[in-house]
Length: 582
Image (cartoon, rainbow, N blue to C red; front, side, top):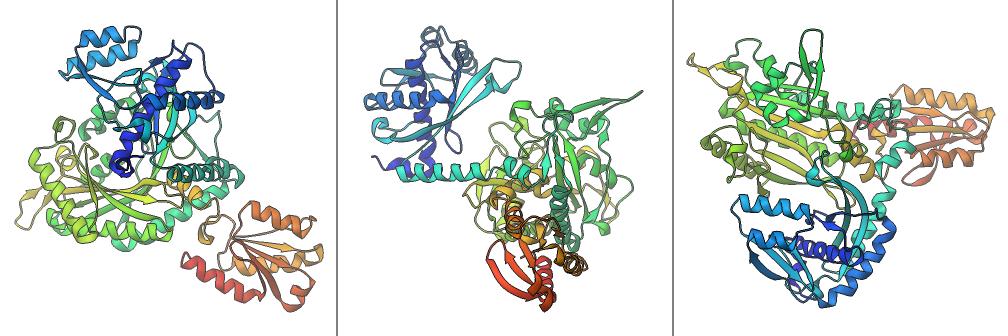
């Protein structure tokens, strides 16, 4: 096998080439199918098709067999540049390719075809050099519905997902992780652990959190405040509605008006807030500010709402009600770097607690399309350089990615790697010179002149719902002691020990430890098994011997049976572990 594709930068070419192979196999089996687009993804590839009759996941192995049968004849990808007329003749029976050809021609770009074996596709390129040698290790994974161009007004297509790797070992490792991820699926574990639910009467993408799930949310919120409170952040509260004019001034309206929920009252029209930053500008604008007051750090944990397409909703990772630990800092230009470094410190402390390793990405605007962003070239260059300097001072290593900036400013995105090796975009800090000017925010400087403050947008967990989903899967449901809804369960062996068990629970409750007592008549073995299913971190078993010794038999989720301990001793030990979030 050629060695070149083992590099990360060539992996998209490997996967894109395999998507071509998938399309060729589908057309062998279903000649009337219409291929549309087949890009590589972070974890593999997909190709969207219109089928005359629906196919099922039972067909995937059949498609794989044809892919393997075709592969030996795929010695290379042959590139050809053609006219729009010639391309449209080739794809005369495929309206999707016709649409793409028209768009390429309108942009004045060269129309290119790539042929491997007997299969030719409309493509801009990015393939392996020796497909018959390099495309050995692939598999098809699943099917899904997907609207053409992501627009629900268009035809629903069938999307076939697959993945490919340079070596069998990498593919096997990925599939093993995929199987483990299925076991850890937060939707399944969330139900098992009684953390959240969804109701068709409430609506898709609108999770309902049980008392147990709400404990987890509140503990995360308290942890965030324990880190940002000492850094000078002040809590504010804003309504969930606003007039459309607020978002027209901020610049969000033109870009996001189709994602908003609209509400009409008796006399006024409102939108349900999709983000909090415009509201926070109005708290700042409520009175004249002096340079001595800055920086002002407004923060709250609050829910925003976005009209996500139903087909994109997925458990807690993609919802319509999004709870953000949101903060906005208004500061002078000379304070920017210090404020960015404060955020870096909070983020590092937060993620270290969960054993989530972080990497850093500086997200810049697309220099080829400055019209997509607010503000002048000078403002953007200045803002991007400020974030570069802060990263160089605070963290050192990071990557830069063009085209990933917010429309109002560049940002630092924090990428967290979980226990399955998956990378998630989590926290963010964004530098904004534009919104304060659009809202005419000012402060009086030391010379008595009016100046425009700088605005820093910042979130630590990102979205509480999504962060909970990631944690559930990261820990396979075994949430750490401090975060568990039930931290301790006391299990009396018989009814004779019920009173003593309640006394043990009372001692724990005085230390704010969340504890339950199982007083039912089930065997202690069954009680232990049920506590293990609910992933309770600590079980305290009490029988006649423990009552006589004024102790408890300790069994933990991580270490199993630890033997008998005085109640006061285990209480003190748990108190310290919870306090230190160990």
